[in-house]
Length: 302
Image (tube, rainbow, N blue to C red; front, side):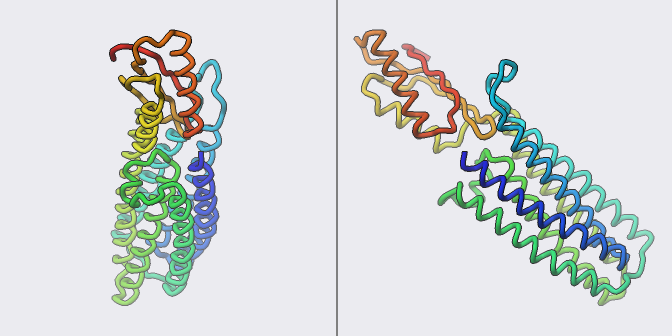
């Protein structure tokens, strides 16, 4: 599936960017006593760890089907993506709010805030590169579909998570830069603490959005509308089939299962009906290689 290669590249871009940024932020937070910077460092370390989990899910989802899992392991990618959303909520969002609350009640004067601002500026550039890489990989599979519509309808959990993390990271960096600047200009370290709390809120909002998107995939969602329309189109092309009675698709990670009932034209012998259905299955799988399992049977009513 093309989406898997795109997801793997986006995960790699994000991991390299987040790990480098995390160490720079941590050093700057220790040097400057900035709560916003510490919140950002924790966020970046959590993101780097999340990329490892996404990669693990991507690889595990490619395991072949076996007797215990006859429809494969594709949904493991959804499981690990959901775990990432939970970690983003807890390790990222809640801890940032906790750290900000602590700094708000025990404010510390920032030490050489220009160091924090320089690191934040560099981090914004690196995160922008990571987001650009994610958007480039998304573009390969979304085609002409608007980004917002793609986010609402895609079944690619990994790319949704990477995109969400990159957007949250850039928003968090912008907030940190703004509040560290304000804390320096106004000589009020409490503003830095408010920045940390704001970053936590952003991370929680993004985590909830990602979790809601992944939840639908974990429960079980049909394949994308374009694929379902293509299946109906292939069925309509076959002369031996009178109509489609019902069709169910199920997205299983990068693969799809199809189950359908079709009404054959009157008078077709059994052996010819079997041959027509087999030809239909071959045509559908040739058009959509991601359909790993197809169960099409003749019937007269749904």
